[in-house]
Image (cartoon, rainbow, N blue to C red):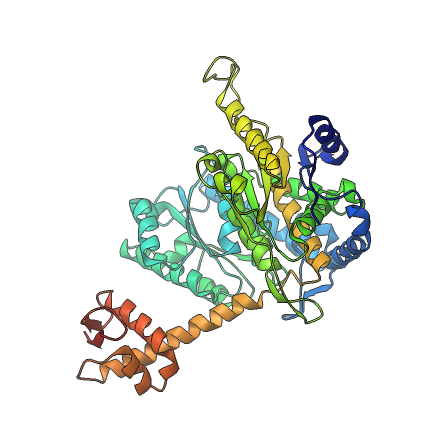
Length: 537
């Protein structure tokens, strides 16, 4: 349970020194002193923590982690291939990395070139969830005007979103390389994006396969499409790599390499962090410290939200990345014993100091239903000039940024609100790789502490199945509507097809179709459930 941390400056300084973790090799530190845990907290958690370490060791050794699909979880092997449980996996990982390097080099040097242009100038990544969030985070955090390719993303099935991205590309589509990412090849959002992009290429008289590469499972639907379409390349996506932990596979490495980013630095940072977070000494293991602080702050049942506040524009997308990593991993109805527990840890965040003008007011004075994680980056600029630019005598913009971070941290503490501060020396590739690996391990350890499986997601599959039922209902409604000569309400049409219990969904489906020209449905009357009448267009 939480207790009050003394704000006496001397006591606070002593607590800070006592609980500060520092990793010189990565230029990273973690301050948990503003979390109100008692002096006996670590001892009380020792047995649970020992089991969590055992569980993570078994995971890395190749134990079945996803019993629903009988899959292992091996994202740690991606940055240290020699740790894979079979030599064949080690070889496959290294072969993937070499394939990524060679293909990117071929694109950059013009050996792999588009159908009509001299070389590729743009990159379009089509994916969703982990197949987009990881590459987006890397692209935004590490990208610059010097990138080899300018990158765009299609990460939804929104037609207007497709149009906006394709409009930005315009004539440059002819020199755009499209990478389609889907493990199964059956993910509908990604499939839809692929179809829309292919149509855009064809509209410009271009063959899609001459501008496309795939990242997918061997023998998947997408693998077949790419093979038949003579795509430029196919990269592996293994069943032991989950989408939310796929950023160090070809999913993240290929877009980053094509963009010209420091892929080796990314892998190195993750590899070093993995080694650090394997240590069983809690005080020397930042992932263990994070997991324990999450447990302390939320009473081990997600009773408070985690607010992530990176004071760096380049890390704007990190809170969104963590939303999937943390919430998909930890949001579970049942524990490992099959008991209903409704576990989870909600994540939200924005960047500092934007937060000063947004929701920090509530964080300080409103409902105390959260704990905060500040992310501080010491280097103000990627390339420092000889003389720092001052916005006023002796003060730079970066000084203000740190001032706002420290001021907000202190203001929260004064109101009894808990926080941690994660400090990075810079926002480069090694730091980003370490940051990703740190939270991956923390999620795994925390899941063990609260007794849930972090590596399956039945709720996601339930949503996909429900969506499929809606689309099947839509086809039946349209077929029945076309056979009618008189206008009909949504409820009456639902009854006619034997789906009275789906009257609400029927109304929503018909309203959507009638709102879009060319869908074969028109509406008469007001758009309300009781008064709207539908008929064939």
